[in-house]
Image 1 (tube, rainbow, N blue to C red):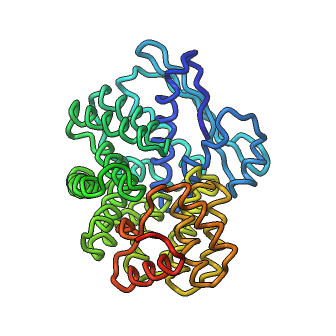
Image 2: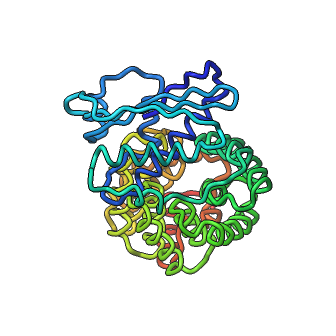
Length: 387
C-alpha cells in the first residue's frame, strides 16, 4: 500500500511513492508471490479503508503498509504486514539510516516481509533479483521524479519525464532503471501518436537497444524494449524473446504482461494475447491505466472474428476512460463488421471528436501483418472513416 509521508513536506511525496514502488518490485520478483501492481494499490492513497475490505477488493491475503519520515539526511521507514482476512499483524519493524544507505533499507524490508510470509524463503532470492542501484543519490532522486511524471498519461508529463531521465543517466550512466523508464515513455509516445511519428519510432528504437544493453536483468526494461521494437517494425521473434525473459525474471510485472498482450497479437497469437491481458488485469485490477488492458483484449477478439466480444471489451475500456480513442477505434471497426449501426454511429462520432484529424493512413502501429492491416483498414473504410 502507499506509505504515509510523515515528513511534513508534500514535496517529498514523490520520494515516498518511489521508495514504496521499489519495495513492491523487490517482492514481486519472487516468482511464487502474487503481488498487486503499484497502479492498483495506489488507488487507495490518502484513503482510510479497513484492511479486510482492501483484501477482498484486490483478492489478496496480506497487506503491507507503513510510513516514511525523511528529515535532513536521515530516513526512517516503518512497515507492518497485516493478515487481510483476520486483520492481525504478522510483522512490524522500523529502520533508521542515512539517506546514503536507502537501498540497504529497501532490501532489508523486502527480506523481512518475505520471511514473515514464507519462512523457507532465503534472503539471497531478493538480493539476486535486485536491479543495479546507483551510488549517486542525485540520479535516483531524478529517476523518482520521472516516475511521478510518467504515471500521468499526457504528452507534456512524458516530455517532463524524459527530460528528468536524461539528467539521471547524465549523472550516473550506469543507473539501469532509468533506461527502462525511457523506453516505456517512447512506447506511449508511439502508441498515442504524440509528436512526429517517424521521430518517435526512431528515438524509441534507439532507446530500446540502449535499454537492452544497460538493463539486461530488468523486466520492466526488457518488456518495454520488446514492445517498442515490435511497434517500430523490428523482428517479432526477438520482441517476444525479450518479453518472455522479462516474465521469467518477474512473473508479477503487470506491464510485462501488457507488452506480451500487444506483441502476441502483432504476431497473430490471439489466444496468447488475451491470456496476457487477462493476467495483467488480475495483477492490477484497479490500475488507473486499466482501460488500456481492456481495449487490448478487444483487438485480438476483432481479428478472431469475435466482433460482439470486441465491442464488449471496448465498452469496458470506455466505461473507465470515455475518450480513449484506441477503444473507440476498435469499437468502430468491430461495429462495422458486425453491422451494428447504432453502436457504429455512436463510436464514430466519439472517435472523431476525441481524435480530430483521424485518418486510416495514420494507424500504422496498430497492425503489423498485412492480413491484419487489410482487415482493419477494410473495417474502418466500411465505417466511412477518412483515408
